[in-house]
Length: 292
Ligand code: HEC
Image 1 (cartoon, helix red, strand yellow):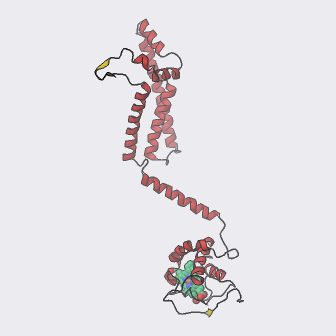
Image 2 (cartoon, helix red, strand yellow):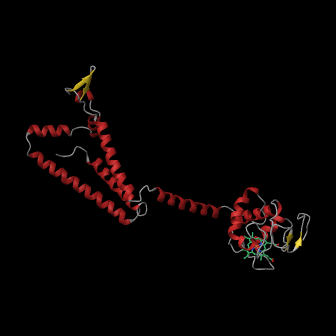
Image 3 (cartoon, protein in one colour):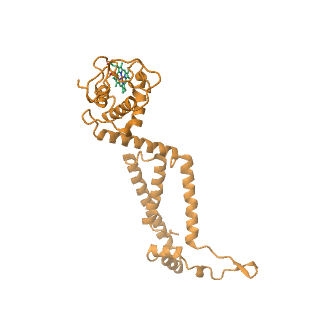
């Protein structure tokens, strides 16, 4: 006979299961795609047609039943669905278990009863089985909730957000650049990536001069930190091998501030390296007093 679940519940339920499976298989990639939308519209129409066919069959069949059977079916389907559902799920347990026989192996006066399980419990149990089946298939045969893939996606998203953020925040320029101790570690990493081929990781010099001594070829600013920043930004006027990292856009102002902080740190605060390139340029001990 006709299912007692009304179509306004059964159609959305089937639809959401299909949508879920669709999401599991295709991820978010095609959700807004016209093909997807027409697919779901078609499914909805098909479900509506199926539902009306089912209703037609029901009303034809009911014609051939006896009065008593007819009344019974109509009674069963009468009233608010939710109320009927509530009554079904929370049957009075005393009522359904009336007349249940005792199982014949009690000990010490303790009797075992063959009680029926409450409907809500039983149906929750079935639901967990269905859920685990769907989850099992999704987990092992698709990418759904695969921790590695989720990690990769989150990682990429994060990188993109950082990129957008970096683009938005104002970049440091020579005017407001200053030495900051907390940038040293970051600067060290950037220095190793961009500068160590010519200056060594410890700044002791290779193709480029030793950056840890007090001898300077390029003296363009009064302040040591600004001098470093300016050279990285503008490159060397005398020697194009030291290129203009800032001007060309190869390194952004904020990163140049980090690198400059690191160079300033190894020049003024760190112990000098054991081996370094011979001095080049002029010796300058007191930068602030030096006027170019
Ligand atoms: C391709 C090699 C090369 C790379 C890469 C390079 N430099 Fe240089 N650098 C040089 C040379 C060569 C000089 C000397 C320029 C001159 O004679 O005026 C120099 C000079 C300098 C000076 C000035 C030294 C002085 O005595 O005037 C600083 C500071 C400096 N580099 C920092 C850096 C930093 C920081 C980086 C990384 C962002 C970097 N360099 C990358 C080759 C390089």
